[in-house]
Length: 249
Ligand SMILES: Nc1nc2c(ncn2[C@@H]2O[C@H](COP(=O)(O)OP(=O)(O)O)[C@@H](O)[C@H]2O)c(=O)[nH]1
Ligand SMILES: [Mg+2]
Image (cartoon, rainbow, N blue to C red; front, side):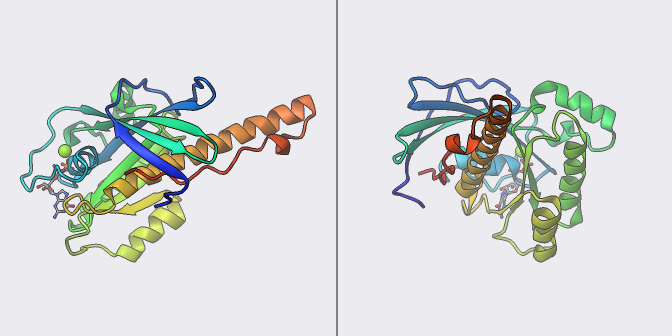
């Protein structure tokens, strides 16, 4: 954890608007506000709700009992990121959407379009969870959803994280193959975690915030470059600082 760069607090979150990618709304120049909508998808019993609850409950909210999610739930959490170098505070309002597996269409593009009309479209990040202890179906489910996400105009720009959950149990699938596919071929974030042991759950959300930060920064730099070309100034003078690592305590 980079303790010199950041001090972070977590407080209760307010409402978040369903933005495509969060837009910075500057307050007095010191406080930035960002909204991240994160939609969690995956096969039944992969551990989607458990990962979310462990994150919200600071690792204290895990149940062995399987209670299938029967309706869509929105969860909110605010992460405050203090950048002691730049003297800025970034207020990350996370909206996390947990979707019952019965609602997830993986067969046709038409039903996927319908599905996205509701609260699952226009997310900044899609988190696709599979169960490493299950047979192929859990992974196949992730693969099908990922195919839909990258082909649909409403979701193809979003960041995708693939989460290998239940690493406290023996793998039924080849770990090396999965990592290779996700990181090298798909070029998505890949995090191995165990909701049960609260292993890497926080790290997953830190990685998400950092990836969003990097994406926003590169978009801002692209805009600067374009303005530089249009108005004839050197955009390098205005180059933004490298985003800091995010740590949630
Ligand atoms: N061993 C183990 N069990 C888990 C883990 N995460 C979830 N489970 C169990 O898997 C079952 C399904 O979890 P749940 O979060 O409801 O799955 P969902 O259907 O994807 O939302 C429950 O019985 C959980 O206790 C994990 O990391 N390790
Ligand atoms: Mg669930």
